[in-house]
Image (tube, rainbow, N blue to C red; front, side, top):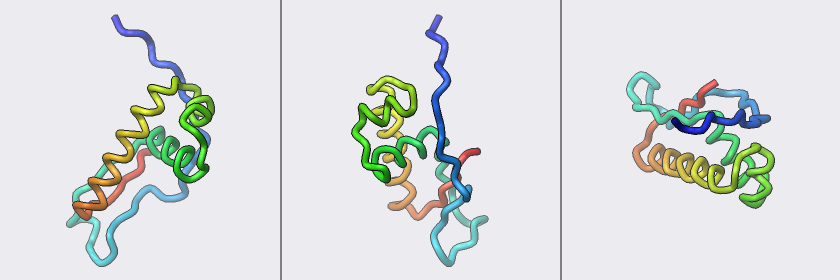
Length: 91
């Protein structure tokens, strides 16, 4: 049996839930889903410029868990930009 998942601290609440390429209707685009924890990781590391250790403490996760969340977020963002997809931020 796996260890129970700890509650993560997510402070950032985005004001929008979609980003998409200009000029293409949303109904014609494939979506990339970004979880709130992935968005929080991107914000803490890349926007707030915290170290991984500091950001992991902010989210109340281990540094290795934070690194995994950040990696998945960056892969999704790269995929969305390269393939011209819409980003849907989960609520």
